[in-house]
Length: 614
Image 1 (tube, rainbow, N blue to C red):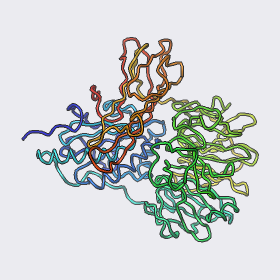
Image 2 (image 1 turned 90 degrees about the vertical axis):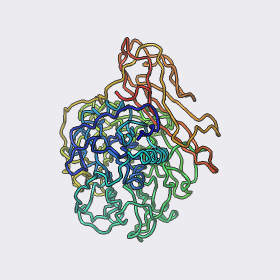
Image 3 (image 1 turned 60 degrees about the vertical axis):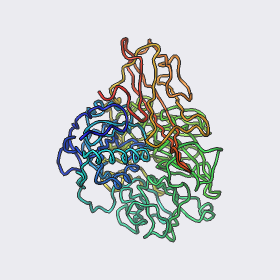
Image 4 (image 1 turned 45 degrees about the vertical axis):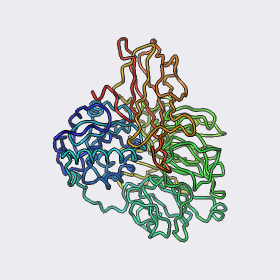
């Protein structure tokens, strides 16, 4: 019986699955031979990456629809040092509700074997063990569904498809009061409101931080409005109280960042009623026209925290590396800061760069920001963004001392003390850090914590920490400060060797089955290139519409990072009322400038490069 043709590209044998350990398999190690007859989708992810978390949510409907023919395997290839910890990975798998096997690729061997260059990257393996497609970024669910339909039909006709149950084995259920709590605020009553993220709800605790008063939300993933026992959330994170006059006008007291639903929700404290106040439930894919839009018509992207600042709610829009604003009275929203480029650049708003802002706090005229992917503490005042601690996307560690030398590791929360000092939930270092704006000194207040995700300074001056991976709130002892001269780290992804002088950047993009490039509203593709340091590129930086571009690499430098943003607009082909789609990905590609190295850098947005896998 003849074998079916692959859906895309040449027939390349998929490299075998090898790693440190397996999760969600009941202790069983899987091989491609075990999976023969099934379509296998490898999801290369790292649990700090917001785009990777988006893909987890996009894959859930596919796993349900194709449960007897598709096996999704998460390949966890870590960015941060903390993500190499097997216990931290196991916690993340539970925290984010990952319901498929996960391979711990701690040494990034699979990453190299499958030639991945960005988080997230997806690779499709057909039932005969051949790699048939690769794609970077998010937003591929529709295209994957079409590809799966084709592969299933082809291999069923050829007799090479095997249906049945998958290898996923769920972990044992837990019984703690909270499960991976995210953020906490103090209520006017003195009680605390905590986002119980992994249980998709909010919990009101007594002032002791331990005793439950009420739960808001069913505990099941969803987006229903209604009373406390019927409303639902999906991994909620930050919350903020509205000023009383604004709350009276808006009809609710608390704004909640309903992160995975891409929504803002409004909560009435007196009734427990929950309503949607911003977002459509669909993730952001392209900028809207104009400086503001109807909040309920706006597509948000993983809002992670919210704070009242500058007479409006500021949103840490982690999914697109921006801050947005929301006006509860007018029901409007718009961009406050950031361009969607994931990097670190200060200056006047909004033309600045951030990387997954995840925590907000206000002190006087300053808005403090925990910018997680740059491991940075940043602040805004008078319309200008500044960096207090942090050196970029790839530098992190646990080092105290002068702020210009200090390092954090993926901080998620921030709080201001009455004296103006700032406390940082230094999440992946398991610490609470203190920054003194007056002296510029950074110190460690507490260490040995399990992924602290937020810090709360109460009206009485107590300091509470949301110790997320320990599923609790703890109270810090006052005045405890010590200095840590820890390790410095850089993300050591294998750099791509690149020749000095003129080289070609090629973005590989093949529309999904049944789709075509869409130029109805202008060019269908867009490519933006920059470099760190900027002098790495002598020519070729900037924005254009072609997915192939000549660059000139500075021969005087030995290494750097190319920052590439590519997108392609497609629509369904040959159908009435065709749906439109936008595929977009950011790459931060470490390069090593070497004589005799390739003069071409291919990046796969969707499809297969002729080079296949290494």
